[in-house]
Each structure stands twice: as C-alpha cells, then as structure tokens.
Image (cartoon, rainbow, N blue to C red):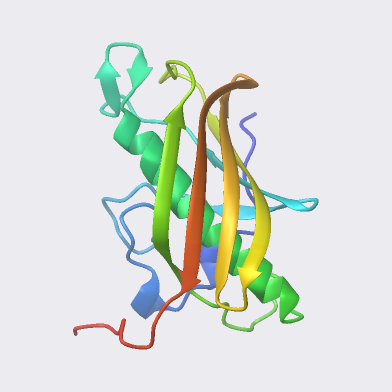
Length: 161
C-alpha cells in the first residue's frame, strides 16, 4: 500500500488560490502535491508519472524543482497556521505563501518508478518570511536537496476572474 499524506494544507486553501500547477487541488492538469505534518517535519509524497522523465528511467529535474518549491510554500503555510493556533482541517483558512527564492541541488539521479518523499525542516526568519530546508528521497535514498524562502502572499495577488 502506498503511503499518503492524509491531512494536507492544500485541502484548506480557498478555491480562488487552489490552482497552482504543482499543488493546486483544482488544477485538473497539475501534480496535486499534498503537504502535511509528520512530527515536527513536513512531508509530501508524490509518484512521478511516465511523462515526467528526463531520460528513460529517471525523473526530469524540473519536476523535482517543482516538488521542492510547492513543498516549501506548503510547509511555510503549515508552520504559520500552527503558530497562529490552528491545524489542518480545523475550518480556519490557512495563510498562503509564495516563493521568494528557490535553490535546488541534485544529489543523484532520481528513478521515476517509485514514490518521491519530500521532507521539510522549517525555520522562521521573519514574521512573514520562512525558510524551509528540504530533502527529496526515493527508496530512502536522498536524490535532491533544496531551500525555499517563502513569504506570505501579498494582498495584490488576487484572482483575475
């Protein structure tokens, strides 16, 4: 049985902000990354599809960067939501974050036929800015590392509908 994130922050994003290609639950063509707590760390589990290859047998680096990016902003949302006294699923809308910077280091080729697990460690560096250190594993082997600096989404980011 494949491991899953049962309570994901993305489930609580309002519909107007649930369209991200990486983690938006309403984007029918997106990846639907889901980020939740595992102890004091965050976790996203994703199995790449066959079209996510760089060369046969290995995942395209852009998918890994997208996983790190969305895992970072989701982790920041989890952390601030918890700091504000809330948890996923409690009916309170969580904060949304955008990426201020993204760093990705590819450690070794990543196989495309296994679930990838992104694990995040969170540091608050400002009331509206968080740094998340992330490792991506395939079969318990580290494949990539990343750092996301995420900032609370500005109020100017509104739906263009």
